[in-house]
Image (cartoon, rainbow over all chains, first blue to last red; front, side, top):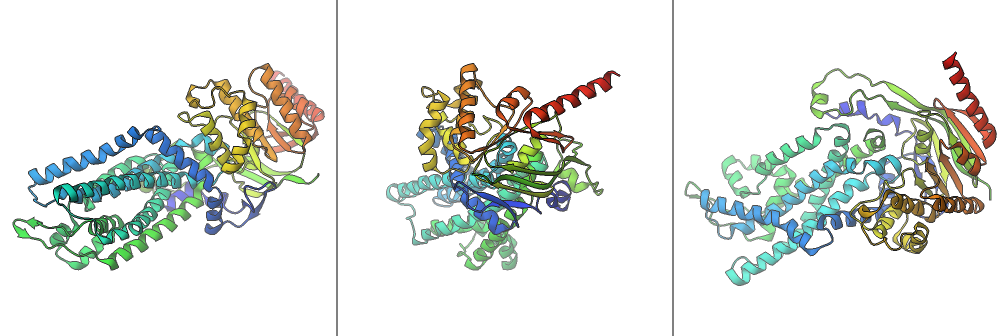
Length: 318
Length: 251
């Protein structure tokens, strides 16, 4: 699949002679032709961190239109979705799980992070067409800024989620917050690595192929149902009836992550049945989670390398 | 203070000739034939040394490769072969308003544009007042730039480019913006620039402006340096060739 891209974006045209400032931000920067490499590229990205932060701030300001109300509106969509799903599952599918809306929300928020960041990154290079054609800057700040802006949005949404949990605990005697919540930053880091890797691929491919964003929308729809967001992973384990297949299922990183979010932030799920047969809640499988994390890191590095090999052709193609 | 500001050695740049503007991933995966796209040579074997403190005008016909040359120096395009060495912080005025976001205020856009030029927040804060002063936009600086007129955008863009105090200033087409009064101010600012040993490279069709500002001119024709030297001489050569071509067309 990627072979054909070489053909349209030959890196040999632009990769042989690269120049990198020895010291940016200081007067008298000397740009020399040097060998490029993933480490040098990353150093250059770090040098431009102020631009990255400006892009993130700009994204968030524009999204919330400088207002608190803007933030409330941006939360309305996931909350309404979760409310609808809760009603469907409770009253149409008649799955009677106590406190199910919390189990949905804890999975839906990371899914939203995943989906929004990838959709935004399919547009980000084309949206900065004018800038790319006129000015030098490390191109990777564009997908990186989109992912970071969505990460911040996700963190804000999580604050609301914890407020919701506290509300449940004190007013409806629901689940209390558990010590495994300490896993949260680790899970977020793994998920961010996954998303940044994928967004490198997507933002780059969308420059060369115009149907990438449509394909992405379709794939995201399919994966929404493949990922245990609306249903707990235990249902999949019961249906597959094979520990090995279930482990493979969890190797899809978003599956492992959503399952881990649910199992670290909330108490084990109860009241789960298929045709009146009760289904046991499963403990979190840390080995599989570690393997999924390794896959995420590989995707991040591969995405960065893929992007870097093509990023200097963007200005000629957008 | 002499020394090399920009050095190009054997720089060539070829582009792929695209038959369709967009390709689809679907068709790319389904097609088995891999045609090599045709290459067009934009620049070929350019050797160029620009000393610190020089002001160089790049002239030539449309499509001759002038803007490609400027983009290669600005590192927007990577050369297909050859090497480019630049010494100093560059500021590009390739499009004055390219980096503006309509929803953000003038002040926020100054910070953003400074960041694109590789400056830090503290550097930009230092230069903020002089940028706003020069642009004459103090009354509007906290309004979103979507409320600005084209002229106001140009003025803000120019002010950011010159007041961010680069060592090398790259300009495409517009050397001076705004009304006659503001244009005078731009030329005066460019003169200060020259006196302090900064390097300016600008691409222009305005030969009068070239003669007025630049000490050296480079005539690019079909991706090659056709002439390089004292501005007046190069302009005469360039104009002669145009007259010659017109003559041939008529005859």
